Length: 124
Length: 132
Image (tube, rainbow over all chains, first blue to last red; front, side, top):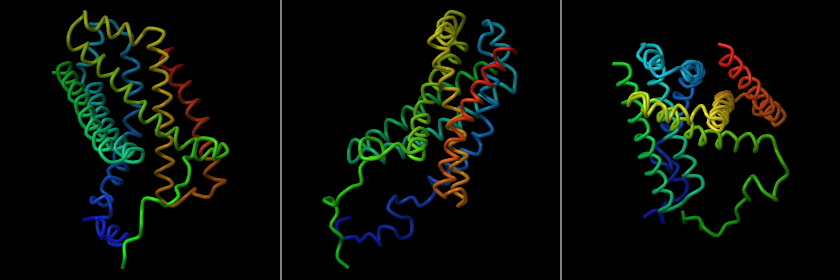
């Protein structure tokens, strides 16, 4: 079907992606959030890493480390999912591209689910 | 309007390799992608450590031991540098998205600045966490 569509027609309205600029805008919003979250997380996690088991559990049960960790994982892995899709779309084509995008989505949400479960279990 | 033939048009070569000289703009661009992809390693290590902490003392001893081993520390500090570099590279993209700092000379200087600043911030972060 795409064979007889001109380049101009493909670029109109939502463009060749079919999704407009939503992906680009989501990257901007999540990058601004991460510019604040990541340094805070690095210092929070960095000061907990090295503590013995009981002390590390007590720290991760406090609201601030738990919330910073959960938010960083949520926004960070969402940002990764979007960014890795762009990389896959740049370097791979056809079936490998689709397979890479699917793998990115599955792995990202998998890691996110384990991370959020762990934070919830430590905090609650 | 007839369709434009696609598929057999010449393509420009990839930005790295023998076709081009070293450029700060292309090097800092590909480095932003590599650090972004590489940060997944850090995410997996952090999530493994959290899940081990939530599981129990034995699982924690293994994950904590791996993360704090000499190799683990090298990987974590590498992730820390990747975090700072990707963060600064992202800010550069946010500035570019407003239409600023796009002149070649400015873009090269900006690229050199984020490489230098990423190293400085990594060293500072390690020092602060070491002497806490």
